[in-house]
Picture 1 (cartoon, helix red, strand yellow):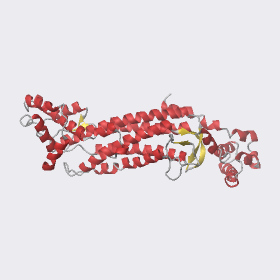
Picture 2 (cartoon, one colour):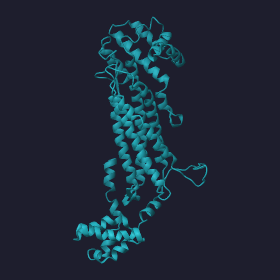
Picture 3 (spheres, one colour):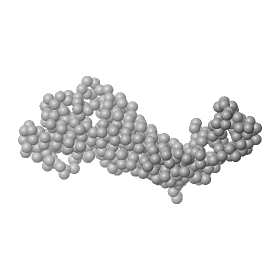
Length: 434
């Protein structure tokens, strides 16, 4: 995790103090459940809550762990120092470390998912607003980077909205997938702890009991979660890359907001670079780097090994913190993105009407020519535009084979830009609702 790409609310989820607070709540709720079952004395369960307002001493826990070489034992020792050894003697009764560690990790991932879902909501608002603003602002569509047919800037924003809306649905599923807890003992058999304890603790933490665990919660859940983060990151990069292309000097249909006093280059004072979207492309790579390790964590030896542990200590904070930052940054980029409709129209007209070639070809087929002949006639006139800088409509009007099938008026009608926007309302209704 790099402070430069971090926001405080997400960072706080992964702080040692937050982690120890969740550990403590798991242990305290488990004691309450065991006391209700008559497994431990009620006074001991009540005594554990003496630490409910305590800020745990992270340095002291680290000091103990330096001796014990075990983080959960170090925490339990510190807790006993706070509430008293005798009062703490039933804490962690029948539990194993993974009961605490795995349940805590899932609580943290659920909280992270909630922040990410809020981030997506903010981004969706921005994308919808810009789509509505530029609903009918025509720009050239490109395939293979080459001029194709007209679209609108509103449609560009709308398709990004739809993509991010799908990501929101995916992230909700990933949140549900990860929202389980396990308090099932050394190998998941509940041999030394009642399943009712697990149910009680999970209810208190807003989780569902894991249907069947070993010493750990199955890691296919985590793989799905991080894979979803990877998909969201790829969508961020998709949008960022489009903006970077639009900001290229020879395109300049849109650009990132350039604030007063901002500098684009240490060497060239004229530069206004798409630095934010370039940064988003890099952040997307960082988030996706968590996906393969998460997939590899699914395979563990027997009831458990710890090969997953070091991986998750890294990818949990890093992936969620970076994605949180990236979503917030992208929202700011979209909110302030400067759009240039005049440049969009200039680019569209750069090749003097070629964007209407399909309409002309289809009109020729409807006039009785074969598709092969229609394609040949349109292409030979289109190549004059490419190679000799001719005007497409003028060339078509001067081609006897074309005008034998279509009148000049009919040809001119095929160059109406409104033809390409007639179904924009239908698309918008599909994306945003009526």
